[in-house]
Length: 419
Image 1 (cartoon, rainbow, N blue to C red):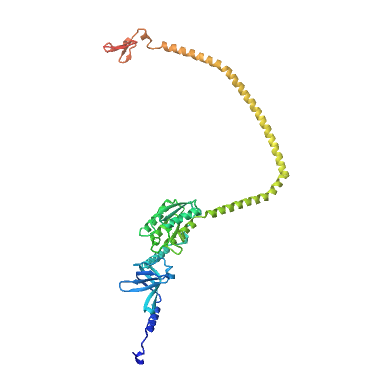
Image 2: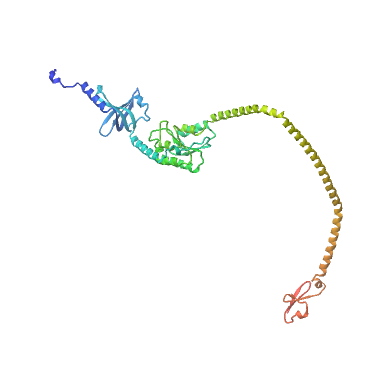
């Protein structure tokens, strides 16, 4: 069928219309961010990622080229809620448009990023990031505290690095969750634990890499406050080199990775050994140089006239001291002999004096014994006499005796009451 030329004026071909639509859409939507649910993601043999982004009312075809896909931290899965950023592109052969995705992130990332920036601004205004409040790390720590997960690869990497680098240092671990709702409270508790005990020289707080959501515990205000209040210098070691968290800004030092935290915290034992060897060689060289410099001076002193005079005077004093020692020895010998003679004399006369003293003491004792016997009040009783008591008193005369009262009569062997 043929149409008149006038009827064809103003009519566009399919290609022309598609080209105009392509131009309009690609200029209008050169960069756009779209939120939706990932559906049926597939990776082609050449590495491109194809998927559909949909919500309750529409769907959008998306493609991520291999070069971009390789840089994604997380490949989206079916059902993930994501925000895709890129440009709209029209594919004329199929008459379809699609979104060329150059960035894919979790849908909650925008809110988290906003919260991150707000807390960062707040703490910065309070002065928690000021360099003036940051403490120097100890040069040779003896004990390192670590707050992280005991089962994570980060702790194993830190421990292995420490064993190779500075095995003389002791490690004390406080296990804490590093992801999830309980992570921030547990991390802050670990920081307070080491701060209160003050039994470590430096504290490392961190974990391995992950998404912003995975690392979010280290962006919590409770963790930042705990680090700022800690009485022990703190190293923040969170994620990879490109990851930054609030704890990095508050801590006294920031390490790009947990492994680098050990490198910052302790010296390398091999470097120390080399420095010690260098110091030893330097000291030896300086001592040799010093001895060589003063050798000639010493030799000149040895030949000096004044030194010879001093030697002669010392020799004379030595002779005088030797003579005085001999004189003193002779005096001591004579004194000792006098003491020995006097002791011998006393030892010869002492036995006779002792015997005379004992005989005299024995005679005195016998006299006292006889006097004691002669004054014994019970001696008359033994000879048959009696003694009368009245009202427990010895009646010595008749005028002391009362006939109307009872009385006791005592012999040597018994006493009886009468009346």
